[in-house]
Length: 77
Image (cartoon, rainbow, N blue to C red; front, side, top):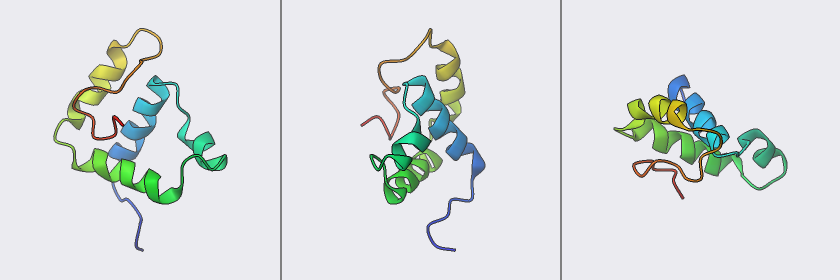
């Protein structure tokens, strides 16, 4: 089916990084701030990122809420 992402890892990493930044992507979609296309693009950027193996360590190293995604993150904007 077009538009589906088959990789669970990038989905959960995208969710985790967003949560570390204090952003709830589910709420953002429900309120209309984030649409399905943009969400899919975020997960696809994560899936294509050569540095995603560092994200779990980055999330674990944050004390409280992070103020910005890592420099290497394709979803930093």
